[in-house]
Image 1 (cartoon, rainbow, N blue to C red):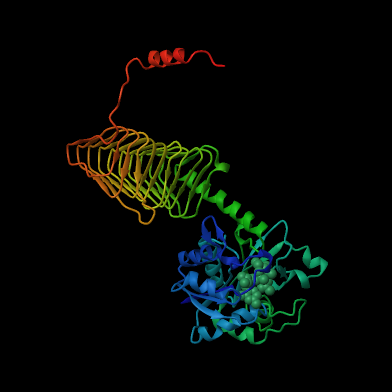
Image 2: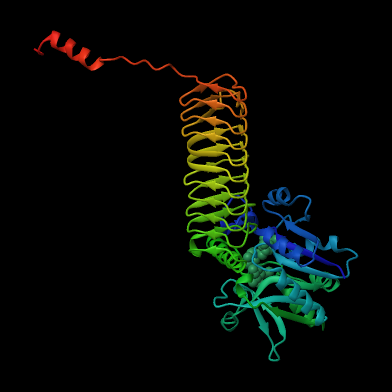
Length: 463
Ligand code: UD1
Ligand code: CA
């Protein structure tokens, strides 16, 4: 039986006070709605319809090609939002899963459980619920004396007794598609907010003599929704903690977990140690047996096994195994660093390829360069890559030696097994095996001090 998911995301998200759609705000590096869509996918639901309205164009741009869209021109409530998707359910006789776009912590496991219970009970509607300490703002689950679900009452419509109920509506439901379409026809907006509440469908179905069930999540954190920035931070905190625990379970050491931030999609090999202040974001992969940090930020990068990265920032680059980076290195986008390379203190590398076992130990700027294997770049080397108009590349071959304090004025090429004398400004290519010296020849003036003193004596004492 097919399952279609409808994700509600047409609301304005007023409380976020943002020019960006609420569900596009990132949580641990991934847009809020994508967490939900990924959980749906993992639960085996491939058809997703997203109801859009305010800032709908932003959602269309972000999710193009992944989901179907339906517009809700006026935001008249969650029930009204689902009505807009009804034409797309034509001919469907399976299950419709309805989710709110602003509940990013729901897991595939809970969705699977909800669907299983719904099928098991042969229910017309099953709501995913949770028991929370502070139910304020959520719809309350009202059960009959026999424990069966009667209806959901919204905060603004609830009596004091109903407000005391701590079992809340997650906003996630499983419906028998045909029953849902029928129930929507009977919805009214006679309530405190003048909205068409999706939640009223449960009461309607029950009155039609159909079965309404509830599936209560074990971990109520999963159903937290994000309406404002405080809830955004709270949800991010919970997810961050879960991510840390998962990595620790996988064999990664976090010396001081609270100070380590790891985005959702980051992969880390076992026996890697993350020191305090390590921030791993975006699409980052760290190998096995690495030592990362302290105070290191790695974004959209891959670092191979047995590498050490200390107090450095690495962005959009790839690193082989056994590399040694930092302290205080800055590797900028587009760099590709081979195995066993050392990039030491106060070295900036940008859009460059560094070959195996090469070393840039200290105080250098290597930009738009291709450096071969086994080459040593001396302290204070600068690739002069910009002429004020265009960027040019510097090429250095294998097993070459660039002396300290060298300018390599690009475009320029230094061959294999070549040497550049310290303090050179290289403007012409250096052939394989050659030594280039490009600096003023030293002049030594013997006896300079005594000549100076003689001059001073001649002039006599100052008046
Ligand atoms: C809703 C539920 C509440 C539940 C809570 C769980 C209703 C009436 N209330 O309340 O029982 O405890 O979620 O998080 O369903 N939306 C539209 N179109 C609209 C209105 C809303 O697409 O006309 C979307 C919003 O963009 C949002 C979702 O529906 O993603 C929920 O709307 P929101 O206003 O946040 O509902 P809550 O007040 O949180
Ligand atoms: Ca909400």
